[in-house]
Length: 228
Image (cartoon, rainbow, N blue to C red; front, side):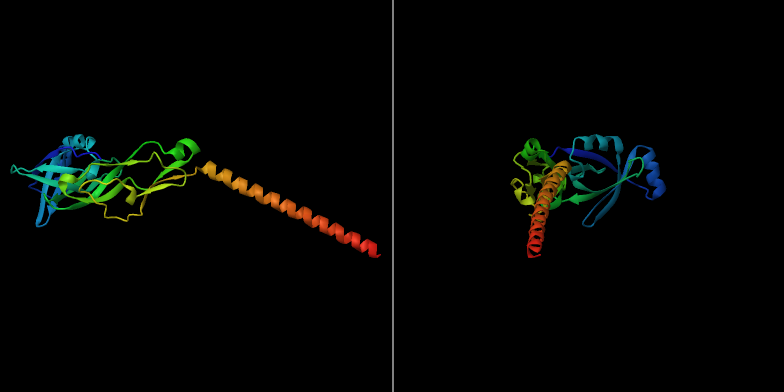
């Protein structure tokens, strides 16, 4: 389990709202954000360069951020939604949700696959990753930045489920315990070879049946001749 880094963002209160005001902010190198929670809904902005630099050292939207507000107070927050431009991938807007110290929170944390599956290494299987994150519930101080999943012993036909995740002090997994996270399956070529073997066995059986049928017909013809 990787521990959270201290991710502090300096934010400034927005005096203006609306499309034009947001466009003006972006052109000046800032990102408009909304910070909301229980009885809280405020508009701020942050410096895009600072945010991108922090994101490189974080686990993405699963990270717990410390928002340094203009009044000198620090508030904990998680990214609820981040809007990007469909063509340029530029960050257009971010919604942060308030996190109350000492209270349980629920969010998704990225999974980090470690090791090489024996089924891939020894039998030519492939790793099928169904999800790269998992839902967790914990206090803010216990939130992991990522969870390591050891796939070394994963053989062909095996899988790892939520219930197989390592126990982490103060962290629970509220999702379906039988949800498959990753599986080791046969490759396409491996499945094709198996299908060819099945077809070959079926052909041998069919040829054997034809041979038996020919023998029976010959016996019937001989019987007819003898009666004549």
